[in-house]
Amino acid sequence: MATITLTYNTRNLVAMSMIDAIRKSGAFKVEEKKIKSPYDPKFVEKIKRSAKSKGKEIKIKDLWK
Image: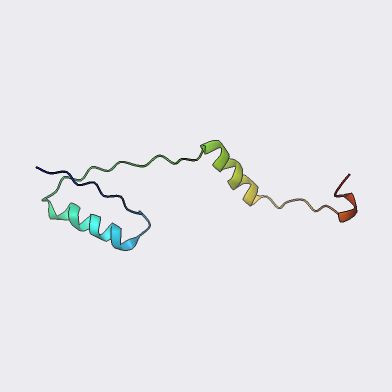
């Protein structure tokens, strides 16, 4: 028995259809491992909250106060 490791983008439709075909063939054993994100989850949540906020308007004359 041989082992092959594939790394693919889960958003890529071609890659996902190929993986689906491999699963359905029954000739292969498929083990999925999720790659842990290199980003701190707290930081990601902070950025997402920031993107949803409306922001604050500052006048130019008050910028350096």
